[in-house]
Length: 460
Image 1: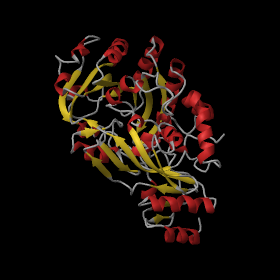
Image 2: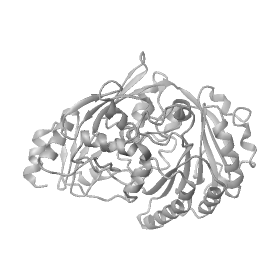
Image 3: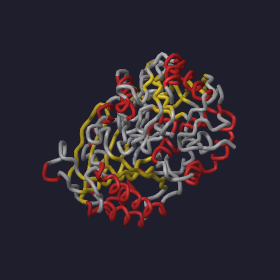
Image 4: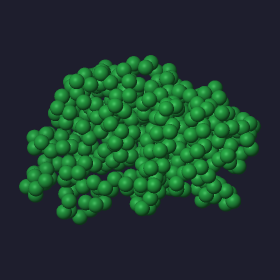
């Protein structure tokens, strides 16, 4: 982008524009995954919906490719494209909670910590992720799941409205009553259909939750997964627990003698009565598969749970991840988990199985663009390390693990856990029978596929 074009963009916006020769360009282009090293032509750092409208129009008129960044947590770095203009929403971080209607309106650049903090003052929350640094926008548009999903559904199930700038630069408001086709597509269809400048969520009474962490020796992976696959789906909806393969972090609450040890474990959240995460409550059965190496349980403010992993996996690490949906944990899959758990290449590399049953199954398959209402777990394999020299090592481990595990999956993935190199067949598999409908909606709202820096759904 030449200097005259940059100057014209600066004239059009209230927010700052950062080009490659400007101070702070390298800091601006840094995102959560440090494995991504791309050089956009410029960043339009929008401060309001008018800036977003002008940026979209500016890019269209000059035939500039456009990418959109909210929280910058995109694993494959879809918010950055070499030589493109990045529409950066990260300055649009605000939340307004209405405690009477139990709703929150949230700026398009907000992260989950913004929403969690604002809602907690009123004893309210909505299901959204497991880390406070995740962008609310990308999470929601992909469907969104988290600690509260078994009790209150997906993030997208709790979306009740949105303000959207379309690919032609016009502004619309969407809900079940206004442009219901677009509202349907936004709830799981990713960033294909517009730039969302604000989201409105339904909130639920959540204040203090019961938190527990249980870890077992890695050699007990089979016994633990056989127990977990039977226990969790039958547990009360107030009980949530994601299964993980991990290396024990070197710090509290874990005792020093197990620091660095490869283990299998479950991170639990109990809504309703937080005291029932104690050993004599809902989780008394954690002793059934094998004696745990460690079990910790305590009541905790919900936002504290959401920040529990922020320090362990901060921005700036090397990441490579792949995901799949599962309706069961097959015996053959357990063998794969044990094998790749033993070969985890770095201390931060991990695998998680997140429950997406309970209240998420109450929504009919056709009610939103999320196509896997019959899935019970959303799995992700993540190779992670701070050292760029280990990028190939963690990538090869994660890709090999996924190749071995995929035959036991349902075929598609949570769109937010997909890589940039998986191809159109994977996008089609992720949306199943909804793919054709999504292509028609894409044709209606973005017939030129202008918004294509995403897990792309081409227009019909």
